[in-house]
Image 1 (tube, rainbow, N blue to C red):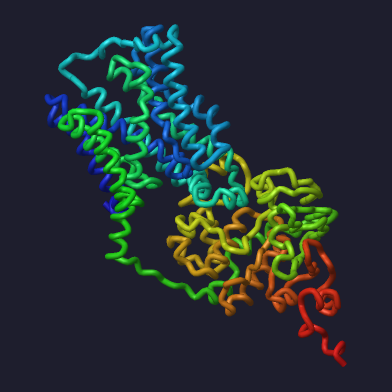
Image 2 (image 1 turned 135 degrees about the horizontal axis):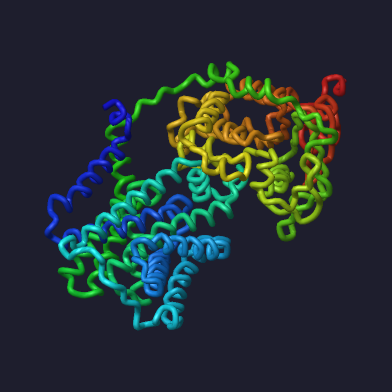
Length: 603
């Protein structure tokens, strides 16, 4: 009983509905029509739930996903026709075919985004239809393929298909839920929210998208094999119809794209309306009109979908009590993760500097933002990079981390040249950064934001549990460092700007970085916390982390950093210890001004 109470209400509700659906054919076994309507609901729901993996989680909208149902149908039908095997037993091969085609196509089409990706997925669907029509020796073209009738007694009617599709739906939802709980799922949501930021925290966006596209196709392909047996006849036009893809997308939009149960609820609603339009509308045009009106209504009145809208209304009526922690007090202690880091890791003892920038240049048309810049960051140092706005500091950060490609010059990290590596590979080497304007994933919780980074590219790390276990415990410990442990369940977008800065620092620490690039860490942060942030930086530095800091808070820089590099017009104009920089007449003239001139210089 206690275990049931611990389950979220949505899981309990889903369990009750599942029990009712399991019992229905037993209670009412003699009416095939309701069974047929329900199994078509299951089929659409599993397609929408699968589509949700690539288009809901990752945000890449596919309008050709019904292609995988046709591929699974034809694969199963062709094998059954030539081998005599029952389609039920070889239906998983339809899923394998769908995954192979999805992975091969995804390696090409997922290099695009936005409207281009949507159009390409439609083109893939129509191309599959053309191939099926013209490859007559294999597919029998427009004549179609006819399969044998089911082997069981007619007394069972649609009950075996009913349970087959229900089983596939349950497996699809469980699979989607598992992905959502894993770091793979948080990485996909990170791609949807901010693909560039996701890459900077170690998410290999190319691999994630291809895997998601393949994962979104498997159960649809398996269902296609079962569907071919249910229909006993398939042809290219019916198997690769674009209306099927429209129903999939509409189902997810109605229920709530990006949620676990939204696509299922939406599919039940859409299929019920679709069946009613078929029975009472009398024409395909009336069905299309009704579905179009539903789409317009969703866009106008339920843009987030039914379940998210109801959840938001519930939260407004039943606001959650939030315990606002004393951030200053929270920052005053040394959390376990810092203590462990201090004991287990010593500062880099390898020879040579940790980061070397030589002759790096970046141009934007006729503007040279970084002009042949040289920079060295020694291991174990807290190095500052200061200068007036527009001097190229943040652009240099972008070049170092791979957010932008260099036009000329080299970037070397830990003895390895990295200027040709993608951002996630640089993150895996131990290079992390925060941004001048925070780039958290606003629709994710604070805990999900901190769990999302991947310190390496191993599958074991990618599929680790992100909401419980060691990863979540470590993320909570890191939130304790910045004084936000009690905010773990809140949406990141609901935090203040200063709090978001602190969450971003915890997010970077999840990478176990050797070098952290801090872009204006004090910007927007409560002044009472600056001393504590300085203490955290020093603590991590003693534990072996090197820092490169861009900051306009000069007192903080002079107190915290050594050495200091001064940038102006895209290149360094001075370097040295804080005392020397403070007295340098070139720096005073270009940036600090006369107020920073030492008193004895005025005498």
